[in-house]
Length: 343
Ligand code: FES
Ligand SMILES: [Fe+2]
Image 1 (tube, rainbow, N blue to C red):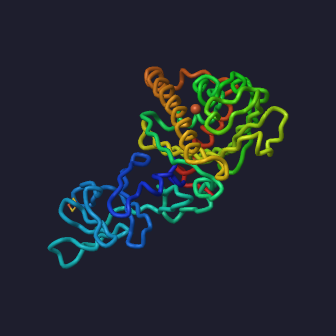
Image 2 (image 1 turned 30 degrees about the vertical axis):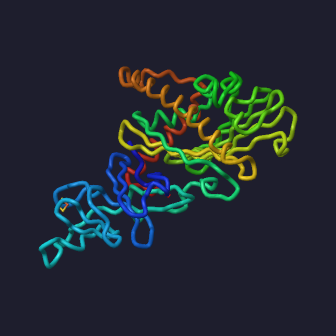
Image 3 (image 1 turned 90 degrees about the vertical axis):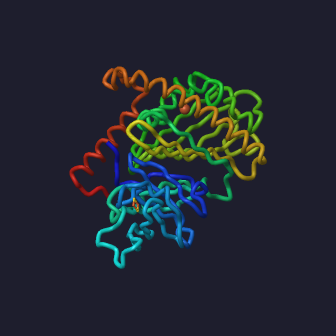
């Protein structure tokens, strides 16, 4: 039940070393990533075609990868270009290579048909790489299926309860009904609440006097990327008044590692002109604390889901967005299975 013809975030750009090998699993497939001689990122199947040793146990030689077991040498396209002791490399000696893009500091891999790799489907994660925004990059690992984490990000009513002392701070968020709109390859979700206390994590950014109006407006696009404008302003003030408001931009991506584990890449950016390194760090620590709250709850939820199955879940109106996104995933997966054109 994984989409293949899409871009999955496999790493932050800085995670791939200048020299050396980086291993990570995506939709159940082991990948090894490294930098070619020109610095560009290469992704190969992390399984030698000879005796299946992980290529991530090997080493880089002039931008190529030498298997650490019996020394086959592979180029960036996955072709074996040297077998020790042989004059000629037998035809077909190769490992799979995956299309890679580095886009605003996220490293993406295309797990489907290489010729279908579509750059138009890279998400607009501009605040990951912009002079206007500052953040500290984040990563968490989940031992739960990615769909449960998608569900969490598609229903912010949990901010009031899971994140009562961090991102939420008021039951009003759970009571508000978001507007949900279909967009290309995803959903746009907008939730507004007014006359609420500032959420505790805003204290890293600004001391508000009194109650505020808040907005949380985001796109959630295939395979599972959240791109969000959020913020708050003093009640009755203009959201554009820099002295009386807070504006944030967040990019978050979920990548299935396996059927039951998930990579979570995230950042929460504040405007570059606002604050200093201490503010950036305070905001980062605030969201990490909150995302650990999510992970605690979703991990506990997954124990019950394993015992009882998802069929035991009862759907409520607050689930509207997550049910629509699940339908979208199921539809796109079915389309891939039947070989229909996906563009
Ligand atoms: S397993 Fe890689 S060279 Fe033998
Ligand atoms: Fe959350």
